Length: 331
Image 1 (cartoon, one colour):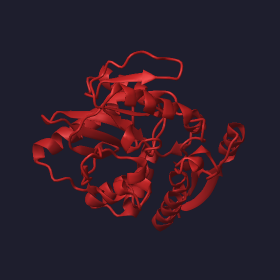
Image 2 (cartoon, helix red, strand yellow):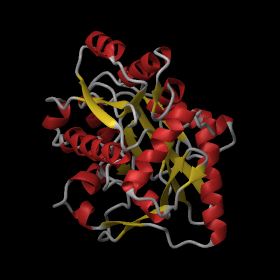
Image 3 (cartoon, one colour):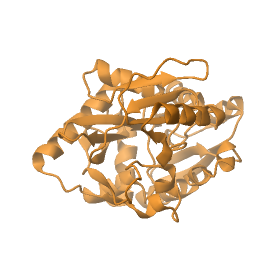
């Protein structure tokens, strides 16, 4: 019999996302937890569910009391305090317990999209030109339109809608104000790369088959992965956003995408499993949009889809993640 595995995750609670109609992403963690629990049981481990709730002091006490040698880390930080994701990962590191996913340093870099972009540029990884705004700054926009305006410290496409792709200065300031009113600070503004969109899961030292996001939207709707396209099954964006995996690309493009994903993960200090989002411009040049450590690994998510395309069952996928945690397999 294998040892116990503690699965730590956010206890879903009422939050500001409910008021914005974005609560589905918060409660979706329970599907992920249930799937991981079943997979671990199939492997032979004894899973133990440990939900974490604020305040962080109590959560840290819970971590300190965990009596297992392996932790499956599905914790994504408390609502309104994203730094708690890093704090919990650091506590696991200091506890000297094997845990899945990324180290606190990588989580810190990628938690703020502007920090991640700086790390990418320092490593020579192409990423769209950008500026960062807060409600206390009013510097002029110097980027080329169109631009996309998005929260710098959110994931799961929170706060991203079609109108976030803007074409005029007047609209830009309007969207910026809306994001500030929704407590989304700081805000990242970057030049919008209007070409084919791809993402890749880096699993240890390997890149799983590439996915392409294909948009069949009516004219006037920008091709962008909005919150609705992920979570609102009745929305126009959900119905007209398709994922193709493996992507229909030639070997050269596949090689360039995989190499870029590896470089992006190395630049941000990632290990375990990470999703890298990329786009090509009209000339085929590739850009890294985001690096997402510890992305959603529920059965319907992109990582699981890509692992299936690589020939892994969901249980085998989870087994690889656990084995990497035990072996501390890094890039």
